[in-house]
Length: 226
Ligand SMILES: Nc1ncnc2c1ncn2[C@@H]1O[C@H](COP(=O)(O)OP(=O)(O)OP(=O)(O)O)[C@@H](O)[C@H]1O
Ligand SMILES: [Mg+2]
Image 1 (cartoon, helix red, strand yellow):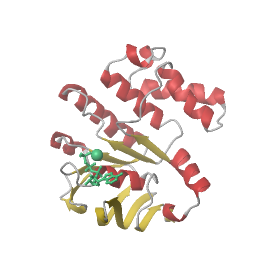
Image 2: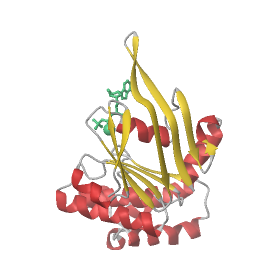
Image 3: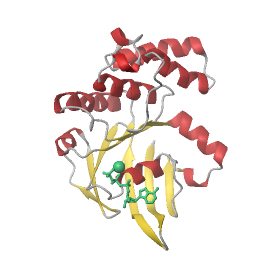
Image 4: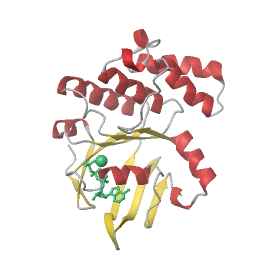
């Protein structure tokens, strides 16, 4: 399975003009690899993830997941692909305040119409994988920032995605906790054979990545493999 962003151009309305957020961007990534996306604020990093997540349809270009062009699917098909194949960890992917860590994961399986017995054991396995078994019954306000981030990562993996898109997962954390999240993502990418795309401001993180792509003014440049 590969992700291939093929010559993507994305513009936003900007007064009477259009602002070009992504300018003929191409990028390929394979399963079991982590690609770090770096670049200054406003360079197009989140826009690139939103296109890969099928949350925004680009003006032109193709989003190929295993050869299938996601930009050509109808809304219902796109929603299904997003639910079943794409895990999203954005800074705004908030936890529900009244639910325990375990229930945050179960609600995802419930919404996808999954068998809830299987979901119970999957959710417990995932909480274990992110080191949160002892906190399974805690609500978000009873967790640290790093623990909450680990719940959102576990939640993103609940439907067994092949593509994991992560936007600045460590910006609210101190460097020690940030490194722990990075090594967790690295480990999950390998163990679960994920295509992981990680937006980060922190250049200390790019050592964990297999590939590094830099965006400047909506144009990408692949840096040497680490
Ligand atoms: N919904 C929108 N409407 C109009 N312009 C937008 C919209 N979203 C983003 N932009 C513009 O597109 C460009 C790229 O934004 P994007 O959010 O992708 O940047 P980024 O690299 O993620 O920045 P940051 O590091 O600050 O999160 C910026 O100039 C931004 O102002
Ligand atoms: Mg951003």
